[in-house]
Structure formats: C-alpha cells, structure tokens
Image 1: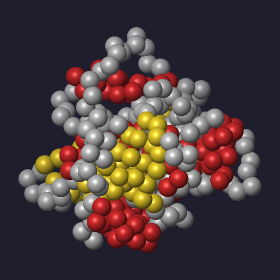
Image 2: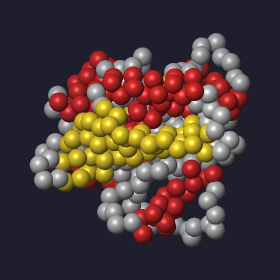
Image 3: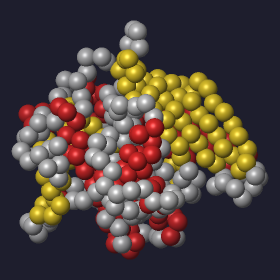
Length: 348
C-alpha cells in the first residue's frame, strides 16, 4: 500500500518526468521512483522516504504513516476495502518495528452507494482494528457526485510507538544475512484479478490480507537480530528486494524453488501472463535476519502464520551493485529486475 507513500528510494532520477501522470506511476518500480524523486522529494522537507516516518518526540519515538485505498472490487475473497485499509497502515508501522496504537480514517463516498455496503465495510474496519489492538480515534467523510468515484475510497493514517533502542534498517544489512518471508506469495493480487477477470479455479484464491503486528513483534521480542523488514505490497517480492538492495548497496541471491506459491496462484498467473514474484501481497513481509537466527526466526513465524508456512528464500552476498540475483529452477541465474511499468492494474 504504497503508492501514496515516500518509499526508501536513494537512486537519482534516470530520465525526465513525462508531462502527465500515467497508470505506470501507480504500478510501482522505476516510474514511481522517478515521480517520487522528480516531484515529491525535491519540494517537501523530508530526509527519509519510507512507508512510515520515525518521529522523535520528547518522551518517546513515534512512527507515523498514511495511505489511501481505492481497490476494485470493494469486496473480494478474504476481505474488503475496510479490513484492507486497517491492515495496510498497521503493517507499514510494523515494518519500522513500531507498535501501532491509533488510526484516523477518511472516507470519500460516491453518491448513491448503498448504506448496507458501507456498513459492512466499516464493520470490517472495526473488527480488524480491534484484532490489531489499535483505535480509530478520528475521521472525516466526504460525498462526491455519482459517477466521479469508485463507490468508496478510504484514507487511513496511523501512529505507533517505537523503542528508541531498536536498531533496524537497510544500513544494518551484512553479507551472509538470511532472507525470510512469512508465507506464500501472490494471493491478494490474484484474488482481486481473478474476480475482475471472472476466472474460476478448483480452489478459490483468497486474499492474504492480514495484520503483521504479532509476527513482527514476536521476532523482535525474542531477540532475533532483524536487520530490515519490508512488506511485499506494491510490486511484490521483486520490487521489495530491489528497493532494499539499492538502498543498502548490497547484492541478494534468491532461490526460485524456495519461494512458496500455491498452485491456484500459479495457474491464475499463467492465464493472465503475470509473474507471481511481482504480484502484490497484503499479509506477507520479508525479514532479513542474521544467519545464526534463521531456525529460531522460522519457528516463530510458523507459530504466527495465517494459513501459510514461512520460508528461507535467499541470502545477502558480498556484492555491492544493489542487484537481486535469482537462481531459476533450471539452475541458471538471472537478474530480478525492478518493475519498469504497470504489470498489474491497481489492487489496493
């Protein structure tokens, strides 16, 4: 959930910006990077462009994040825009090691949208917030003319508390560190796309939308040496790994056979011509941890999994080119590139 966030981008703008916004700017990858660097970062007084900003208050450190959600369809297998809005924002906070505490919610409603549908969405938001241990403490509602929106759009902002002693970030990544993910990939994106395309499979593809607060803090509370975390939303695993490696100036090696993808997601990706490594997730994250902590970390993640199994999928190399190297099932090596355009229509 990231199109409205200033992600951790340090590379220069490779090409001038186009005259107009295109759909590629919402798909992640280099188009979004150019937009962030060429427009937002040069005008706004910000030093760090991550999903959640760390704020140093007098008595404690805080993390603050904001995000907007315009998913279609509003209701999908495994959730709806309401639960998605809560999960997306608390997960951005959790990726900084923060404990989410408070949310705001802004609703843009299209004239004529059924009250019963809105009630379902808000009920889902309340249930998700209570499950995450956060409060929705303020909000706003606007109504726009019929035909000028997509039914319901939601903006959520979140504040979380942060342990000032926590040392985590791409600058702490070291050669030999292990790359872990907390479960199979591609379910959210393909749940959305399967509904849109009217595809039916033997097993229904359900979104993985879920809060990551519990598994993240289980790792931190257990003393696992977590170097860096990133949720695998916009652009999926491929974009997340490329962004981290570019910022850390470290190379990463991934094993394709170690990356879990369900058969139904594989089938849907084949039908639609998509690569599951680039498909968005809403309940999956990558944790780079010290090699000595891999077994303990996998055990912890397994205990907190939501119908999924965590996996050790790769490691950090000695290289400093910021590349992600993928070992294919055939044993060959390819560079796992950043998205250059909009592989997927909007799914969050």
